[in-house]
Image 1: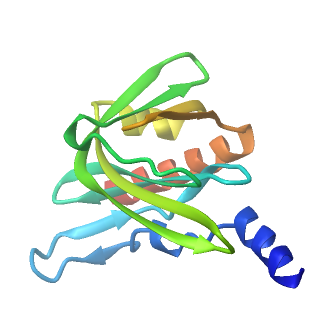
Image 2: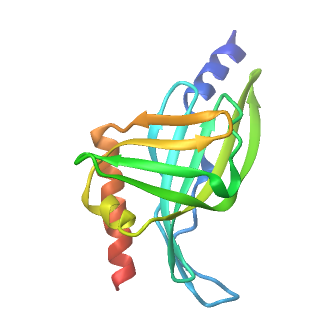
Length: 171
């Protein structure tokens, strides 16, 4: 009974230590400064969670996404897209830059899959993230689209991180 209770707790709060970029470091090979935000959990359900963060490296901006779910979602590779819809009905997209890594962990008989991807955003995407509220996103996978509404509190938190990200780039 105790193991079952512990399993239910673990399923409700998956561990996301693998979902974060290092924050503000210098690449030892290229001397380029890598600027990144910490991951913001935009949606968490009983079985799934979606983490979004930003990264600037080698003169480009990127969007990092990590999905943890009870289903195995493989990625289309370079055809994968992420769409974000804002409160003014603007929709922005980003295209896969780096292929996903998929892994899994088993907690009390339930398998949790983790898929991570790096996307290259279209022009104006990052600026919209810093000035507009996200209301919905869609993450394309091999067995369908994973999409969800974003609660205002989470949208505000991510907008704050996007603002901090852009201000660190301008310094």
